[in-house]
Image (cartoon, rainbow, N blue to C red):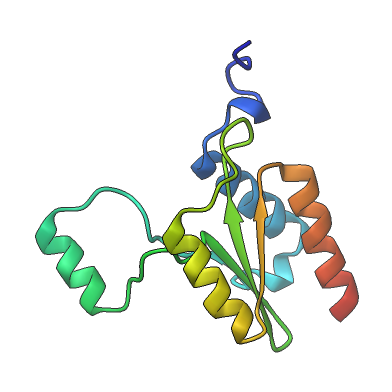
Length: 125
């Protein structure tokens, strides 16, 4: 059965990301800028791709990052009703980040991601 239109189960990764950013900015205005996206996907021309690659864009980097009090949390969002599988490049990047002791997580639902962020902020505030 297909999820109803405009429900969390029908949201794209972009929509999920928009919702979490809006929630974060409203709930934690003093931390605005600490949660940010990493625009690493999308179709680009070969020329644009070369420019982006030469300026540091790297395949596999997670969607978002939360930087709080000396720690950096890498966050990957997946469609709520889709596959939670990471690509090979995402897996490799996650292993690299974990080898440097960064926390990397994958989420496909807004309530769980919000609870995770709240725990991080509660631990540092």
